[in-house]
Image (cartoon, rainbow, N blue to C red; front, top):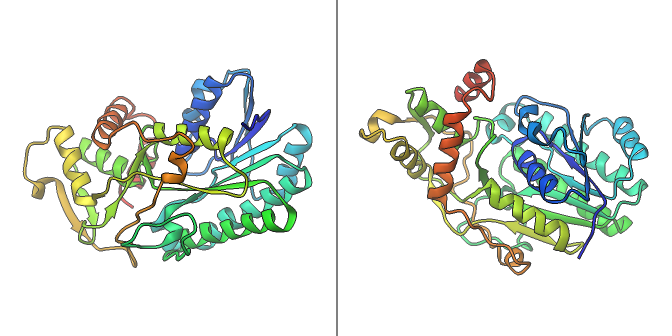
Length: 332
């Protein structure tokens, strides 16, 4: 079993990494965690408030695309492990300004890899997405061909190829993960579940792009945190692990479930409206998680239970973001 000493978490004020950080920092006081984030529009220092005073956690505001700052971070600390979450992730945004996705997701990853190589780290865990497989009707295994269909997914696939090249060319000890959609507390409300939830709480309709029949699999962020725990300690260098659920739901089903949880007992016509689809909208992602299950992981939170937990969190934390930020996200 791998035993890290000092772990660098990139994108730590973002949704997924902040939840992973809180889980790991609290559970492993003997490990030092250094969290970095440039604090973009969808990250929030409130996400890591509960661990900000922990002795085994330190936050540094830094941009992963700044080579000198990243290199200095390694010079000042004995970092032996990187868990690289930082990324621009919103597909809709990537259709409008795809260059920043390349700069952040590809160039930023390359800079981290180069610094990691120079400082001879022991693990580089790269967080990717199931969208690199493209829209599939068949199940995607870790060795399936990558076929990204939007600029965001393409930037993540490009970053993956650079990560793998550093493993083959420089023997950098890398692990890659590819995950389904994640939902839960602290998620910026540009993504479908928090967006629908907040729109409904404001008395507004869920706006569904296209037909709403697109299928998506979702994992609660607590299950994802446990997945990264297992990958950190038990993952094998050079391997790729899908982090996914076997359950699939259409976007219409998600909106309906949320209206039921909030007890909005009216017809769907009152709470759902269909709007113009994005330029290209993948119909389905379906990944096999058996390799990760063989390490001892399985999802524990059902989708219905997870949705109830998520709605409860948003009802209690309506002030987590500034009102103008929420409104901007809801109107995307």
